[in-house]
Amino acid sequence: MQINFQQLRAIMKESGIPVYRDSAPTTAKYPYIVYEYVNETHKRTSNKVIKSLPLYQIAVITNGTESDYEPLKEVFNRHGVSYDMFFGIPFDENDDTVTQFITNVRCVQ
Image 1 (spheres, helix red, strand yellow):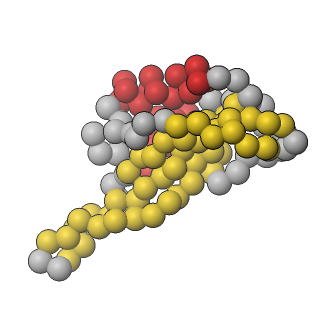
Image 2: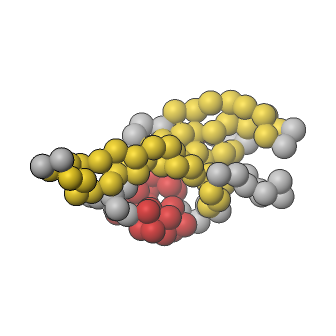
C-alpha cells in the first residue's frame, strides 16, 4: 500500500514507541524510533513528474533485542505498509552501547 509521510508518521506512533525526526533528545528512554529523509525518486510520464516518492530510513534504537521492533512491524503489517527487511547495527549513543534496527519505507507525495 502506498502511504504519504503523514500516514507513515501516524502509523509509527501507533506502535506505542516514541517517534523522533533525525535525532532523539538525550533524555529519551529506550526503545525509540528515529526516522530520517534519505532521498526521492520520481514517477514520470511524457517527461513530466506525476509523483514524487520520498524514502525514509526508520531506526528502532534499543539497548534490548530484536523483539523491541516487533510493535513497529505489527502496525506496518496491519496497515499494509511496504517496508524493507530490518537489519541491526550496534553503535554508541549517549555513552550507551545500543543497537539500531533499521528499515526503509518509500512514501508517495
